[in-house]
Length: 161
Ligand code: SF4
Image (cartoon, rainbow, N blue to C red; front, side, top):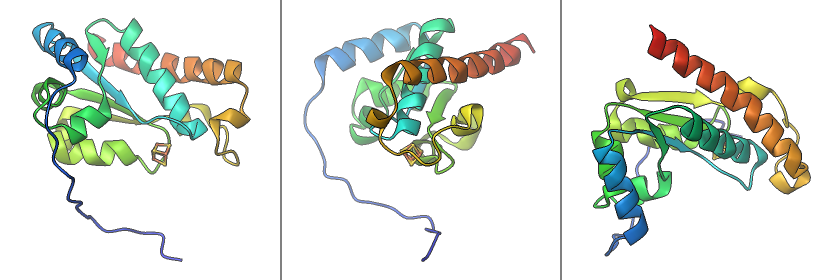
């Protein structure tokens, strides 16, 4: 089995329109100079931990706010995409070493403007579980809390430098 894919590109169907709520939210974050925090997400438990941890980081670190990775990647004319493209830097929390969303973001904004975090080594759990529904919900939150605490400490450490 081939365990490698070289760089590749994918043509994506175009789109019309805006998400009104997303536009207002992203424009406010642009005005407030917030640092976007993006993540992957479930149904995989690793992605769900990343998503929950990203929410906590954005809620608890001043000047950070959650951004939608999908709108950023797939609606290039949106304010969400503009916010991420123009921010000084963005935080991407991926669920595992495959770093799916960060690999896209890296091409979009450049490696030097992103902090790319693999959440898996921060909790070292669930190597044999896929579905988030196979892990009790309380545990999702508990593990995400642990991951978020480590990321928050890292960001505060950076800010204090
Ligand atoms: S990095 Fe990719 S494979 Fe890993 S949890 Fe996220 S979406 Fe899933």
